[in-house]
Length: 553
Ligand code: ADP
Image (cartoon, rainbow, N blue to C red; front, top):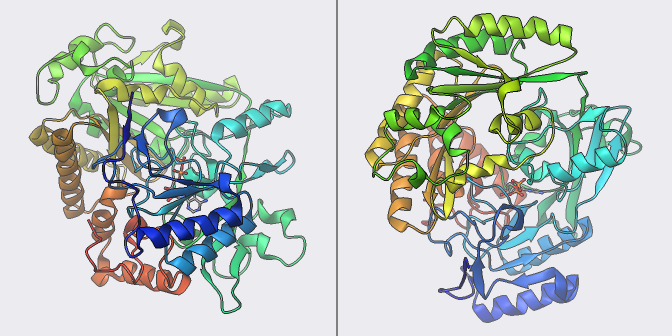
């Protein structure tokens, strides 16, 4: 039902004629096999999370034919990836690599430049190359999802011994999520910090006509580096991994990841806080607990509306008015749920055997109860389908999909995120919450904030849920996001990650010392990708061929 014929026809990339493009595609087909190249010349089909399109964003913020691929190519090996890079350099056709393409809220599988050829690495390069039960590490290809890695560990009988760390939704790729610096909810939640070792195909063709593949860290050793590739991330000399995350400098074909030993027990807990104004004092309580690891996983403090929306019912079940749903209505509906009437809900987990957990949980309980009206919800009272148990699975390394449910809030539910980083201070939380509330109010949008506390910083994640077919609403969402980014920047806050459509704006806020960072990124881009074929515009980095020619949004 959600498929529509392309209105604008085959999205041929700029700078090449349709005829020349089709000839180039035939050339790629004969090199890789006809089944491994698909032309995107028929329809836009959205599907759902587990059957998502790889040609465009199934949750478009703009018209769905704006960020769209002309074709998708499915390499089966590193050699295939090299061949695709050579082909793109020869024809000056932009490529956009994805691993799985479920990067929802940040652009999904869509390329930044219309008509790019998407390299879907995940479909065929999806092997788990190693699970090392002595070192608690693994080596994976881009197509390995959190689900697949978890299943394989169970299949090998290692489930009792080791855990993976999964983000809120488990269908994404371990490689893709880590490269985009996604997070999960065990003590191994900082995925980028937990990876060790990359294999990268570079985007240019050398004088010898070949494309470079190199390995970072210990993988660069001439002989035998595999023995420590996943154990020691740094190797010798400059640590290069960083430039391949949130960038467009290379195509990652293998990545090492650490796995967590089973901590010997775990226990989820949930607290509710009655008043909106509890936010600042609570964040002050969270900071020292988190830094000292009494709170051991990413602390999640969610607004009551998110607890309501994750039940999966449309907004119209609760409220039919326009403008943000009023607080008294939210509170009234929360009354009949497991959390009861409240402003904020805290989800956390304690790890280790019972006596160790008991020590930490009693400190947490005492500290949280310094906030008048704080309530601990006894998990024993919660039904099996309560969202709490989804958080329980995720924080103990079992992939899950429940989090998708709040997308049902709107018809044709789509979402995009505003994700600023700040210190773990009550005053910062209030400023960010305040600006989000003001901008949502101006645009008549429901505000669903969640504070996710890393170790010494917190991400505020504000997901705006909108009707993906409602152009008027999408304009308001974009305005709200752009205003929040500017407001936050003026106060000294920057985003940790952003949607394709907002990458230029966010990159522009990291402008210290006359944009020195972007100048450095541009220097790297021009050196590594002189023809500018790899993911032009990703994270605001434009190759010379595109730079200052009107591509920035
Ligand atoms: P997921 O499905 O895990 O959410 P994606 O596959 O959508 O992740 O990847 C997120 C983003 O990271 C992509 O849009 C792309 O820009 C980048 N990316 C993903 N995989 C690779 C890769 N193997 N090499 C380089 N960049 C990648």
